[in-house]
Image (cartoon, rainbow, N blue to C red; front, side, top):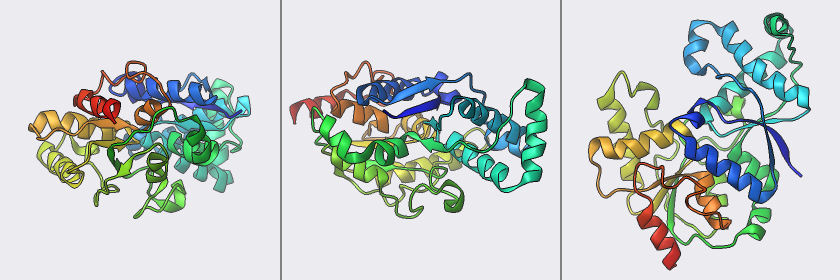
Length: 285
């Protein structure tokens, strides 16, 4: 049985609680064990720019908690995934960095030796559990047009995240097709949604969001793998009065529907853009 230390990230406790709900429900259904850790924020890019050493230590503490349990660590947040992957590489590749970080960790009686792999839930579902295994668990085919949207940090820089082809990713497409979806290709599926600038340049952010939404035109839903991207596309539609509305689902929400998990358990009533039209179409298929 697959077992991981679980690092949901800060958004999972606020704006993306439904992502956490659906991830736990899907993993339970598939028999993937998630072990909660008393995680701290990964620091995102803000802390790194302010103090790289503190940023490294924040990520190293989370990795050290997983290492103590002898487990790899999985997150549902692309930003957390990127930050852990980058910090892990820096710690592994430099004895000087590793010693500096462990000197900080020693103040809380922790040490990190670089033995943990950081994973994203999409990678766990596709690469570790496997598409064939998911197919065997499908209770209802989701026969809708789904438009995958990856965003930035799960794909780039390729040499750090080593997740998929940054310009032509396929993991989400393979997963969605395995549960019955027809893929509606979005030419902007790997473009930035502008979430990091939403508070300092709202107009530019919304232009970036509109481009991605327009790219998904004709789809029954957009499927995301990042809580910030989900927030930008889901809430962005309400902010700009975008029509026609396109439901935006976390990848674990749509997989959960295929596994026979209820919409309520997947938190589909918590999405901002109404999901009821999509759910009706799935039921009628």
